[in-house]
Each structure stands twice: as structure tokens, then as C-alpha cells.
Image (cartoon, rainbow, N blue to C red; front, side):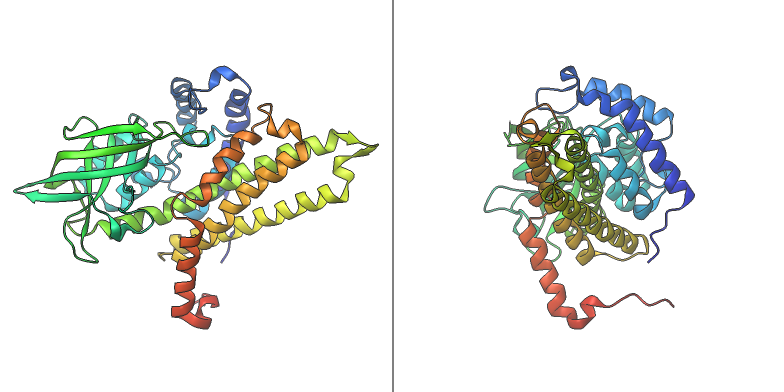
Length: 401
């Protein structure tokens, strides 16, 4: 495992870091940059996106044939980390969830005609998208086998009935990937479909209020009451919905980790800057051993997260599934982000708890990291299953051939 960056990957990382410093970070300090849900205003984001696009800093997650940079997972990881130095960063490069994961899976799974119809507009930044899987209890959450929303085939069309919730970005999305049940088969019972916002037979019931700042389009509850989807809009094939879900969620979980590492480092940056200049009882905070221990531990936890993330990216790039590697990275980085925000607030005191820094924004956002794309406990169960199956092989090193 060689994590040395190629000169091209390092060039992207440097240019993205400079772009964030020059064009994105300054927006955070202006109250006029925020929408009603504490994200960057979309019309402002589009202005910055045009600059990023003109500088070739666009779609790092896609292959060159799809209009992307073709960096691979390990090559794009440092750039994703750099772009999320700002809370507004990822969307400026068309690398924000859920579009990020949707584009990657469409590139892999869609037919050429489907890529032209459904992927190209997202890749160009003309439309937003959503992944429609999670359901209210007793439906499917972390366990897709519990999905209740059904798609009944009638001739050359499927008719969808059911309910989904916490569908990120649904309020602004035009292109949707839907996971619905087409049979009761344990492995082949789910199918993935594509549908458009303007298709009749579905509606958004509400935008679910959450604790933290929201992605554009919120987290919505939606209902299907006879949505008709033509068979040509099936992804892969009927019964391959679980496979499609696995293809999408693994890489998307890992890009979450890449971005969260950037936010974690931002927390350390804010904490160090304050500790370096703040004095109490005649001593700088940075000179107090207790503060040094806090910052040193954060540095170590972030680096552990970076190594786990890069190992998983390396495994994906060489054609592996990286299931246990992604689970380890997801748990480590999600918890590190929460700890980084909490520690930085503690070091900043009341200033950190106020809206004068981005720390309170990150802290509220960070709490969801341990839930989205699989709760900590689910990923630890996955790791235990691998351990039970592989035994000592769980810790084996790859051997060169």
C-alpha cells in the first residue's frame, strides 16, 4: 500500500485548497451568504461553481469520459479533505452528497442511454439528485431487506406505492434513484429505478426538521401513490437493487469520510488559532499541558482516520469491495469529527459555543455523522461478521504477486 500522491493528484489538492481559501472561506463570515436552513445560498453557490468549473476543479469523482478528473478514490481523497476546510466547500466542486454518490453509481451501473439522460445533467451541474431508500419503521433503514415500498410490474411499466423518509436533497432534486421491492426474494427482491421530479404519482409530504444545518433540499418524507416508471428506467436489472445499493453506499460512505476529515482539521485550526493568542492567569492556552494533550489527541485521531480512509480508497481502486475497510473508516472518522468539534468548542469556551465561529455549526452537523449511511453499531456488527468469518485472516496483509 503506497499512499504517495501522484503529481497530478497533488496539483488538484493544491489548487482546490487555494480556491477554498480565496473564494469560499470568505463567504462564511457574511450572514448574507446563508439560506434559511444555514447552508450557502444556491444562487451564490452557482456563481462560485462557475469559477471552479472554469478552473477545471469539477467532478473529481468521475472518470474523464464522464466529464470528470479521473483521479480514482485515493487520488481524490486529499482534494475532498481540502475542499471541506469550509463548511460550504463540497458543493462548489459538485462533490456534495447526495449528488456525489449518485453520480458515481450512475457512471458504473447505468447504460449509455441512461448516463446521457440521468447522469450528464447532474455532472454538468444543471440538476440536483436524491437517493430514495430509507423508510419509516417498520420499513427499511440500515437493513435494506426490510424495505416495504413496492413496485408492481404492469406490462412495460412499474407502479410504485409506499413511503420513504429522510431523503436528502429531495426538495431541490430533479433526478431520483429509487429502491423498491419487486418480489419477496431474500436476495433478488429489490430493484433500483430512475424517475424525474415532474413524474406524477408521488409527492413530498414534509421537510423533516433536524438538529443541525441542512443540505440543500432538506431531508424529506415522500409518498408514492401510483408513480409509473417505464422498464427502461430500471438500473442494472430487475432484482439487482441490493447490488446497486451496495455499489452506491460504499464509495459514498468513503467520500463522507474524506469531507469529514476536512471539517475535523478545520476544528483543530480554529482551536489552535485561539489557543495561540488567548491568555489566562498569565499563561497562553497553547502552553497549558491540558490543551496540548487535547490537540495532540485530535491530531492522532484525525491521522488514524486519514490512514483508514486511504486504505479503503486504495482497496476500491484495485477492484476490491473494501467493506470492512469502509466500515472502520466510517466509525473512526464520524466519531473523530464529533470529538474535534466538541474539543474545539471547549478550548474556545463561550466563543466556541457562540455563532462567532463555525464550530457550533460543525458541532450540530457532526452529530448526524454517526447515523447517516449506517449507524456506528451497524458498522461494528459488520466488522464482527468479518471477524467471525475470517478469523486471523481479518488482519492479513495483501501480498504482492
